[in-house]
Length: 156
Image 1 (spheres, helix red, strand yellow):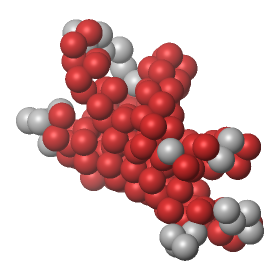
Image 2: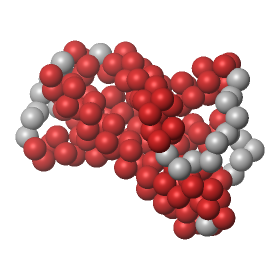
Image 3: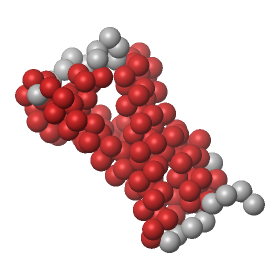
Image 4: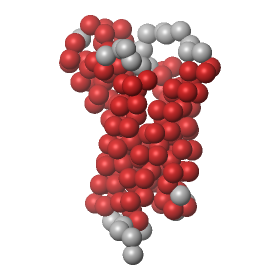
């Protein structure tokens, strides 16, 4: 396993981008018929409040940037944990699923309540399982597979 700072930074960045892309693309499918711009504005509302929904493409771009910044931060946490517990890189699908579900819990219990997002009605429990957890599971698996590939190096 590589531990060179440049290789670690590359793994964190690419794993965050892979996980973030999997998550946001899943959200675009799950939350149809809402257009992608509205979904991204919803992300931006965590920083900007309800005004994000009237900001057009600018606030959608802020939402996209915020989404990927969070994804890279979570990838850094995963990589740091994987350096301490290399089994996470040997079993990336399992570790990614577990990490993705954990991220969902952190976002739902801590990040969103502390954000400026306007209150929304709670989704039905079936939607939480089918939608929220699924998107975060995809996030975790895409992120962990990417990190594992980059940190373990090519197969021998």
